[in-house]
Length: 91
Image (tube, rainbow, N blue to C red; front, side):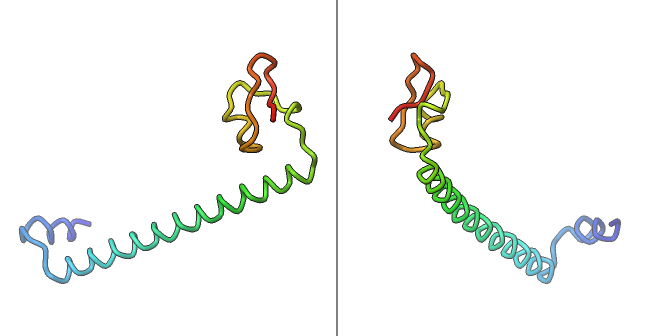
């Protein structure tokens, strides 16, 4: 570790080889991050679609779900809203 410190501070500059390695490492990290983000978005969409299918097949009724806001009901179906007076979802 001390040797790495000496390379950077005692010479006062980075060599061309070190800059190339740094650029390659940053490129690899950027590509990996981009791919992971893309995969996460695709998986999120697939999970949402599967959840919607299961809700539709189960005959899930909106009046079975307690809520305080519309967002809580919209997790189950975009057509549902929250009846804040009764505290249950409605279509």
